[in-house]
Image (cartoon, rainbow, N blue to C red; front, side, top):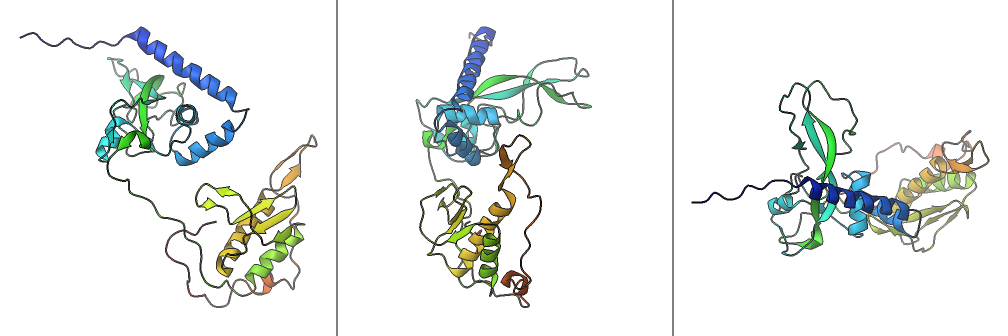
Length: 295
């Protein structure tokens, strides 16, 4: 019986694949200054927070609307199968070597970088390049990153099988707010020179579909949706006040504007409802459903 031929790696082919991915990454970086590429990158990063910036950019360039990605094996562990004929999304994964104490010196794929899916779930990294830079000094023992190789992951839409478990869904608050709290927050907004308006607007929100409030520094306005309950409107107004106080533009040393803390806080008048009515003397009964509240 003839033994099956042993597979041997082709260094030239691997180098060509790595170069092609590097070229794609370079082109994607150049595109960030044009069109909606930067915003699209941020949206992908929000959905895939465990991937390195380089791999987020690679994923975005190949699958702009990626929702969840994982290796072949990880999808299999989750009960889903990659459909036949689907092309994987090429990303970079670290290659490690043992320190000098390891005489073998053989390069090993880093744990979690297996293209068959060593990651623990979709959106979990098939790469660990953000954990340690290639030129980081080796620790007392164990492997160190010596380079990168090309691996492939697959987007949720490239697979089939049972639905993935979903996380908690944000819920809007119901009921009344503590007496005087909304008025106190509104007065603080006005003290900062912003007009507070209650009317509809069209601003998307990545987590809940649409925003409940928005702060416009150019127009000096804070918008809160009119249909919100008193409890949710108060929560949203407190969130927008945080933007007003913490993110407002300030003059820089060259006359340019940036973001940063204010040089001197504006103090509320002694008669402000926010001073006299909060915190309440009694704890109000909870009126909101379980789960995180939408902003």
